[in-house]
Length: 262
Image 1 (cartoon, helix red, strand yellow):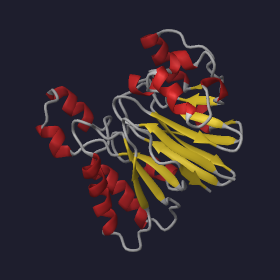
Image 2 (cartoon, one colour; image 1 turned 180 degrees about the vertical axis):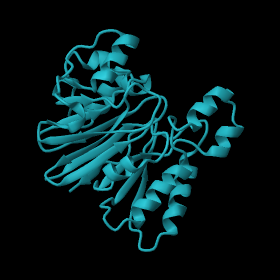
Image 3 (cartoon, one colour; image 1 turned 30 degrees about the horizontal axis):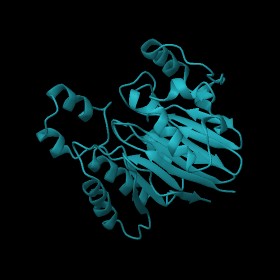
Image 4 (cartoon, one colour; image 1 turned 90 degrees about the vertical axis):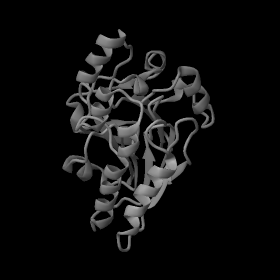
């Protein structure tokens, strides 16, 4: 069995990832405008009503912009504390799935969904791993700092969408207000290129890691470039003997490559 993985968009203007098995289609976050999301799904023969679920990482608008319209046709999977924060900020959401003990994981169709905690300035931020018949991938963005828990939960995946948000010098010297810079740099902010490189380097040195492909995502358009993110992580990999991981990019304004995970 296999999983199809594609980042529809990744960045501060909107995030959404599509994961498909032979019989199940899951959207991770829905941060695009609804019309954009519908158009992106159409390429894969999908409409909102054909999705088996939308899994939410946290309540920030760049991850849930289209959820209020999507939930008319699609079941929403969200941690109760995040659901409460969404309700407080945006009002009622229909069609929220009831999941007992959310963090212990659940199944959507034939895909096992495994949430895990991440440090970020949201009510109850989560990253996720997805597994179907031995094929496994993870979506891990909006992470303040690398943690043991993050490493433990992503290392068994063949493919990981990993945040590489900013270049530290570009951020410090950029035009953002000081308080915003401090938020991004904090332990509950976003991963820098250097932090992403550290994670990838550790995975490359870990003989038990199954990670074969890293897709760098949530790349800032103001405090980073795709080339800089890629080069920083690529250079870290070059210093790892026998490192066979492949690097790719997720984009803000177009989808990524389509990956088949077996």
